[in-house]
Length: 180
Image (cartoon, rainbow, N blue to C red; front, side, top):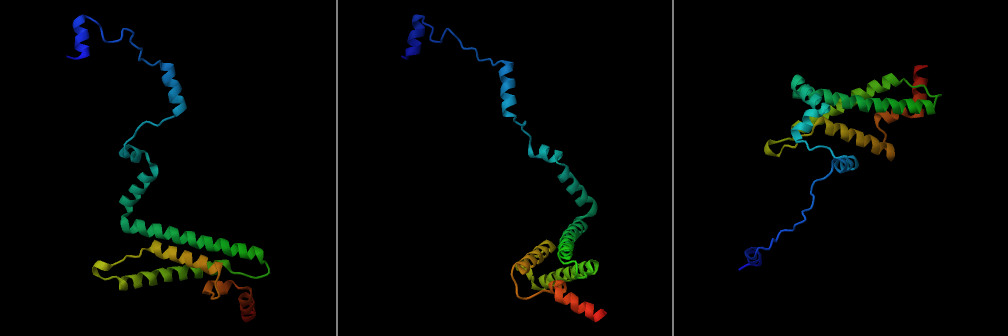
């Protein structure tokens, strides 16, 4: 026989007579909500439905198609690298105002060289891929490699690229002598 059942048989109430008030005042709830500032729970679908960048991405992808979208994305990356190069040239021109520079021509040459390098990398990638061991190299990988190689050449290098040779002060003097 259990103690509870024995006490119940005797007529003793085993539950506490003073019940605690478990209700919480609205003021307390408002204070907690104010301090915590918790966002209401949302599912991933609800979060994605409210994301305008994601909606724009989906719309562009659907309307343009994957190939055109990727082409536009790569063009934006190329434009960003070219603009970065233009800014570098403008900075060099400000530092050395005595050296004449045709920045538009240099940027145009840089863009052509960049596109040529991308095309060569894609051709070599297509030749190197074989069956199940194909490792696709996207244009973004090529652009990242070009950007890294530019930074490493800027940091320390004894060999000068075509563009760096064009930027050298003595090269500008030689060109000036040739055309005068």
